[in-house]
Image (cartoon, rainbow, N blue to C red; front, side, top):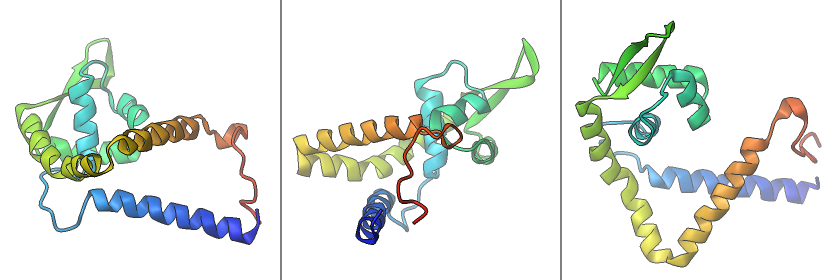
Length: 156
């Protein structure tokens, strides 16, 4: 990869980070972090088979990060753990009433920038997220151990 192309890729990455940070402006008082909200959303939308490992897979978060968020959600009384009767080492997670209320309070703050962007961009907003979904699928297929993704120029 030429240096010019490498610098352009860094510029793209910077734009992506800027976009992500703009969705969660600092100084907003939110009852939940973005990661906690992600986990609660999955519990809400998919109440079946919610173990820490399943949540890790669904969010593409590391198991350690999921465990840390779950601990915080338990301390905030947003979730409950129930032992799995088939496997004593495992447990199921479910959302509490407190968790549902915290999720609803957070969504208003977190989603408003997206609603504003959709209103301003119109159909381009939908295309933007179709491209993001396509990129996410391609990145999910990436497996460094199998060498299935090109790292052209990464070591130059």
